[in-house]
Image (cartoon, each protein chain N blue to C red):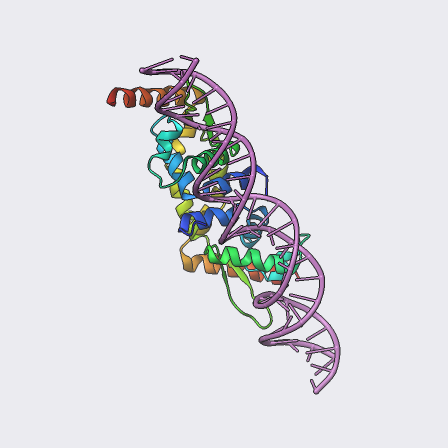
Length: 113
Length: 113
DNA sequence: TAGTTAATTAACTAAAAGGTAAAATAAAAA
DNA sequence: TTTTTATTTTACCTTTTAGTTAATTAACTA
C-alpha cells in the first residue's frame, strides 16, 4: 500500500461514506454519533472511517466528557488541488484541440528518436 | 467497494505509479512499454494499473500494429476539481479564523437543539 | 513459416479494506 | 455505587488490491 501523503489523501477520499462525513463537518464540529446517524452502518465501521480520515489528516479530534468530537482539517486538500491544477489545461482544451495537442507532442517525440 | 464515479476516480489516483503514468501521458500518447520503463515492476503489473485507469476513464486506448497506445482522458478530473472546490474556502481561511468559523456554526447548532 | 516483440490473461499470493458482533473502556447520571 | 451513554477495541470474515511467474495471443520480421 502507498503511504505517501497524496496517495493517503486520495485513498481517504475514495469512499462515499468518508466524503459524506467531511461534508457534514463543513457545518461544524460533530460527535461520532452525529456523524454515524445518516448511515446504515454500525458504530465500529464509523470509528474505522474516522481513523482513516484522521490518519490522512483530514479531520482532528478532541475530547469533551464522553464525546470525541471531530472537526474538519482541510489542509491536505490543498495538495490535491495543486496536483490537479497541473491537469487543468488538459480538460480545459476542447476534446479536438487536446487531440491535436497530444498528436503534436507525439510527432515531436517521434522526431527525437 | 464503491463504484460511484468520484470514488472510482479517487481510488485510481490513490496510487503513485498510476499518477506517474498520468503525468507521463501529459507529454503525449505512449505505448505500454514506454509507460512501464521507469518502474521496477513487471509488465502484467503495469497492464493492471492501466486497466484501473481505463475503468476510471482517465485514459483511452487504441491499437497500432502490436502496440496498444494510451492517451490521457482528463475529464474525470474536472469532477474532482469541482468536488474539492467546495472545500477551498475552508483551507483558505487561516487556521484561527477557521476555528472561529466552525465554533460559530457549532454554537448555532446548539441553539437549534 | 519460424522467430521475435508487445501486451494480455491465468493462476496464485499476501496484505489491506470494509464490514460485522461482542467485549471493553470512560465519563456522566441516577 | 450502579447504570447508562458514547465510543473504541478485539476477533473475525469476505472482497479487493497489487504484485508475481508462466502461458497465451497478436502482429511484425527474417
